[in-house]
Image 1 (spheres, rainbow, N blue to C red):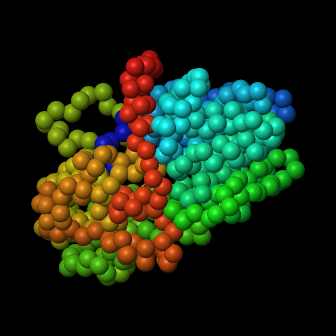
Image 2: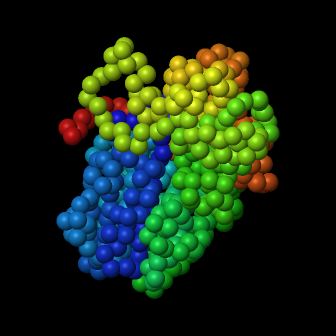
Image 3: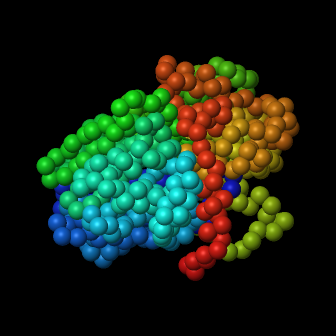
Length: 475
Ligand code: SF4
């Protein structure tokens, strides 16, 4: 998949159903609603009383599945995954869910997040003779469960969870059982829904809405929910509560605006961020313009708070495919313009406030500012609805290295110069917490403040990279 470099990439989405005929069809629809969380690969495992069936492939959900495939994914329980790679390359072998045979039966896994001690664990397992099929950290969890000595699957699962560290919202499937769980810090979302008698697991509530399911509750950090024909059971696998560290970036950018996480609607939170941004960085201007779609909600909030008119003066092309023609000098800003194009008639001669959710490397924002200047903008004031990105993410978001992050290497006046804007304002971290209504520091903000809630080991990326570059998959 040709993914533009300027934007952050979503990580993964998981969805599961227990207790409904043709559960794979509902899972397919759920994955459609979660497509924004991963566009590289998609897969579904479904279960009958006798067997588990799997299909997965590279590309969007609509490309990976068709009616024939869904018809063959039989059974009344299923779970699926959409992926953007954060560990392990974008290869067919790394597509999820993963399904393995163990001496305790078949076991499937779908993972959202990143383990921070995966390098260490994988090296230890390989030393003891484990053979890995993929280069994703999720496979380590399967190995740890499969090696469990207990007769009880639940005990083996908990023992595996005690050994892994980092960010993980998981769906697991085995004969007659669907399991959902979240890591003790609760980095990534996972919620429970109900449709008729069926129980649903989903990364976001927007997928529940799509299938007409009712939201029940979020899975708690450190909680395992077991869903079977006898209903739903829950247990905590950590006794001491950790500091909750939900990824603040889910609210800023990743989650869909129509989702509700921990009782907060994402669109409303983004509007609040825009309002707070207007309080912190007011400026006289003729209009507030969002960078679509990521800046829409925050721009609306900024406009409401400031009383400056909101205008959709940048138009997004929703129908971008891949072009095999490499743009030449004649089309220097091709990749920026093909996606977003300013309306000259509205912008010409105006003082504009441009609102976006984040700046990563800054190259895309700079090209965008250039096209706004060419459209005749008199003044351009950039407003960003989160603090400057100075640190990378080790919990499952594909940030570039710190050397490539614009704000890690430049102060505000250098950023203003680089982007060629008349002013720039980022939302402060205190302002972000205020906008979201957080009093208890229950978020991970490590990409802004460098305070990583769970220590990390950097081995895996290097270790995996070597393996990925040695094995080439012909697609
Ligand atoms: S470092 Fe940033 S992107 Fe990563 S989990 Fe924390 S808040 Fe989210």
